[in-house]
Image (cartoon, rainbow, N blue to C red; front, side, top):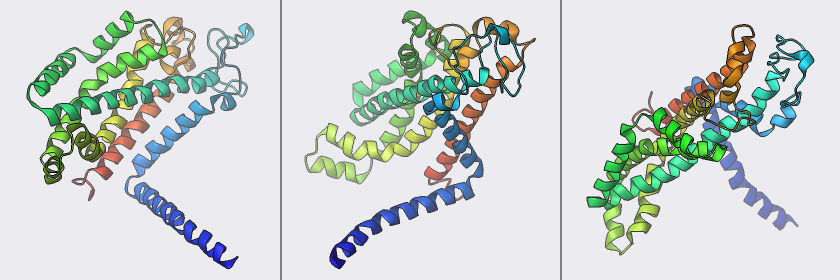
Length: 300
C-alpha cells in the first residue's frame, strides 16, 4: 500500500512542477507586461461571451418587441433597444461568437497556408520560389479591402465564404514573414546535417524548419486577428459580409440601423465599443507576446 502511494506521489510531482512553472510564467508576464495582461483579459472576456453567450445574454437576441423600440439604456435593457425592440446587450454578446470565430478561423486558415507556402518557398528556392513570390506580390498589390470585397461579392454570402475571402487577403503577409524566417533557419548547421544523413525535403521542412519559426508566426497571427475582425466588420457594414440574419458586431452597425445613430446613439455604442476593446486587447497582447518571444526584446 505504501509503495502504491509513493508511486502515485512520484507521478504527481512532474505535473505539480509543470503547473508551478506555468504559474510563475503567468506571474512574470503580468508583472513585466501589465498592458499585455490586460489585453489578454479582454480577449478572455470576449471569448467567454462567445462560448457561453446563450447563458450570458439576458434576453432572446432575435425577439422583436415593438412596444420597446428605441429605448435608452435602463435596468431592463442595459444598452437599450434597437428600432425593432431587440435587446442590444444580448445581441452584442451573441455577436461576439461570429466576430471572434471569423477572426480566429481566418487566422488559422491564413497561418496554415502561409506556413506551407512560405517554408516551401524558402527551402526549395529556385524557380519555385520565384513563381510563388511573384504571385504573392500580385496579391499584395491589390488593396486588401478591395480584394476582400471582390471575393465576397463573387461568392455566396455565408460566414465560411467571409472567412475564405479574408484569409486569401491575409496569406501574403504570413507568407512573406514565414519565408524570411525560414530562409534564416535554412542556413543553420543542423539542416545540413539532416541532409547529410539522408532526410527528405518534406521531413526537413516539417521537423526541422517549421518548429523553429513558430515565434514570428505567433506574433503575426495575433496581430492578424484584430485586422480580420475589423475587415469582417467593414464588410458587414457595407452589406456584403455575413448573412442578414447572422448577428455580428459589424452587422449591428450596418443597414437600416445607421439612420438611427443620431437619435439613438446607444445602438452604435455597444457593438462599437465591443469591437474597439477586443481589437485593442488583441493588439496589445500581441505586442507583449512579441516582446516576450523575441530574444532581442526580452530585456526591455
